[in-house]
Amino acid sequence: MAVDLLNAWILKLSTSLRALPAVLRLATITGAGVASVAVPNAQAQSPEVREYQIKAAFIYNFIKFVDWPRDALPEGSETINICALRDDPFADALESIKGKTVKSRRVAVRRIEPGRDLETCQVVFIGSSEGKRLPRVIESLQGLNVLTVGEMDRFVELGGIINFFVQNNRVRFEINVNSAERAGLKLSSQLLSLAKVVRQ
Image (tube, rainbow, N blue to C red; front, top):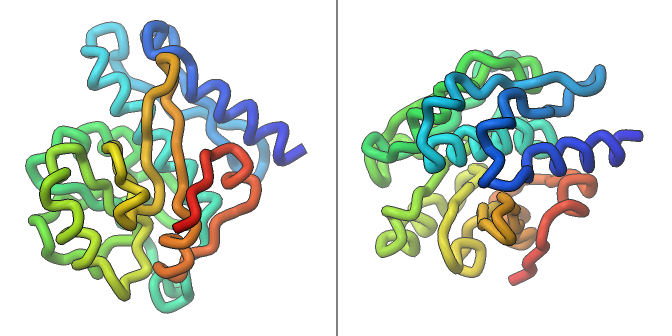
């Protein structure tokens, strides 16, 4: 049943980018079943902004299927911090999930400077503008229990964990399971079954 619900969620979120204006409410998985995440003012948004809204909803759901070590997400902590670079336009899209609850914690969105305050993040989004600096960014995250999410060629090959890509006008994602293990993160087999899995 859980796998069926997860498949339905992925199918909904992977709706053709050409049809994004119709995706006004994105299916998300909760412990009780299927809920929804609103995509505000979708009709007035550019395709790029709508794509970012969908990716933000993906990230919100990824968190539900990732387990962090207790030290990285201690019992009693009130927030899960999703971080993006201060000048990355994706940070604006993350505002759509700010304050929502996941793993009994509120989602907080932080805008950070490159290479700074990474230890305060549970999730770090690395946009395509950081392509040239990606090896340095990944290196700066070594030893931290951080879920890295990107949207560029060779992101997972260079050590990132989850990467978005567009295939046949649909948003897809790939996962480097070895990078997740090195970060001390446990990914649900249900999530892995819906991703392109990379091992290196």
